[in-house]
Length: 81
Image 1: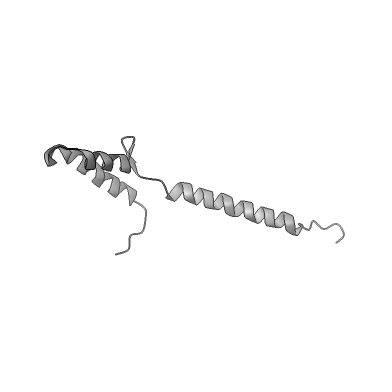
Image 2: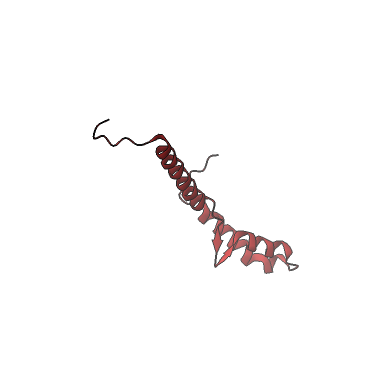
């Protein structure tokens, strides 16, 4: 080709792979985040809840926290029944 700017196949492959990897990384970071509340992850709250040797009345703040985190984590997402 005279004066054309053809992309070499190897370069095109590298460009496609880079775009796919960056896209995957962005989706992974956006959608695989564990919910958190008051600076603690859901896992940390549940570990405290499961390991606590206290009455149900004392566990109430953790129950409320879990409900808030569940509600917040489903905002903006389609839920199927």
